[in-house]
Length: 332
Image (cartoon, rainbow, N blue to C red; front, side):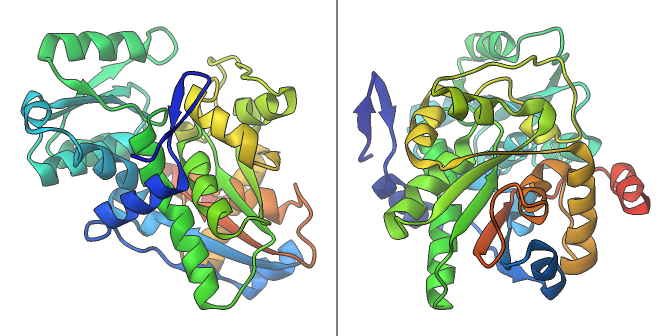
């Protein structure tokens, strides 16, 4: 990797994202940029939606997982992998492991969406549940690795994961260039920060002047708080949110080191704004988006940063939502 060292952290670079794109291109879907006149009217500008719910496993997470697992040595592959996740990273690791012939064990919260648990199992992975409010996934994950001799695949704070997720940003830059469109803003969901940090590395190398913002739900706005403070800030992890994919209590060390340098700020949306954006994506784009995947659309449709007269891209990061919750949101 062409990593750089910052305060003891080995951080990926834009060249690592480009290398990841070459490595995974025959295995991932180049997801489309979608546009709706109705959403443009609400936003007051031109809004493109990067549709990662159409990616394999229904989220961007497959990109980073495959980029990481395909670089394991033969000995590491034989030992298997362990990962912890509320669901999308779990599915990405499970499918990547299946494609590469690796045994995977996924540690998932007991209250993870049913669709995410079942999809993870369907890829052949073993699933172990834990109580996210009372138990430490890091401690359990470390014990599983010790017991099995397996390799831990972190959900975001890993240079290979960040580089793989950054391929979303490369695609956005390439797609806009093909349409001869210069974006003013790019907004992406943020949990631990793997997607937004990798995306920022890629996009800033291609479109240096664009502003990039993270988007988070109101109860899990740790990145917005950390960016404002200039240092990592933790929040109460025992709060709840519809956005199960974004319930990180604090940013990653690697991801925040990148985001602090490259992001223009952090945007925060309400649960009701998320619900409305899930409906808008379905009604106007015919796109199924999970709550955590809809926060960037919510931020731009609700003018959390200046959108009027601008051209923006909102990344929809995933579409793995239980049918009952989806029906409830659509019927509101």
